[in-house]
Length: 207
Image (cartoon, rainbow, N blue to C red; front, side, top):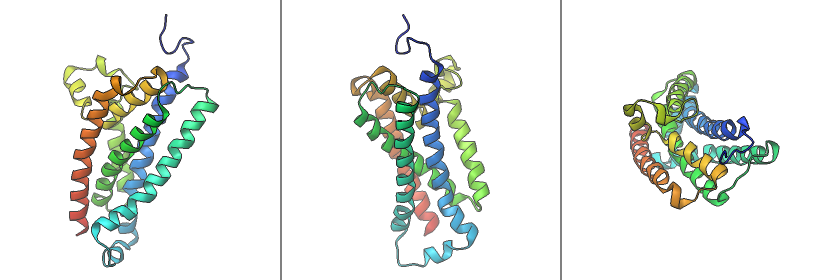
């Protein structure tokens, strides 16, 4: 018996992964273009002389990115549920919560890309580089278990790897916190590290 995909439909395997990867690229791209666009248009200096702290500027840039990304996430989730007929066997509330946490992690990465890029084109290329590197460790193209041991170890430090594992497990297996807690803990730990570094790096660049 084939578990979790008894009809052997390719969509059950590929669609959740593509859905998860699209969320990563949406957050990364919009976040990466936030400050890069201001610098390219020559309006970054005007933004910095306004009576706002660097943290307020970062929050002001982050909120639209999160709103757009979360709206996109909900629309894509509805599409794959009602358009493609994929089940959501686990907790929808847990999925929505972890998706928001993952967006914060990718937002931090995107903000760093944004402040080191001088043009929008540079930001776009860096997003592609980071995104494709993450893609190799997600298990979409090849199972992580079949990779060399050092790459398997490296995958533990890629947020997208944990995100896709959680996404597939909730949607297709109906897994809960009791099963997913190692990946949730890893994603939370990586999020704390990445967001802390990102905030300090971006604030230093703006100050």
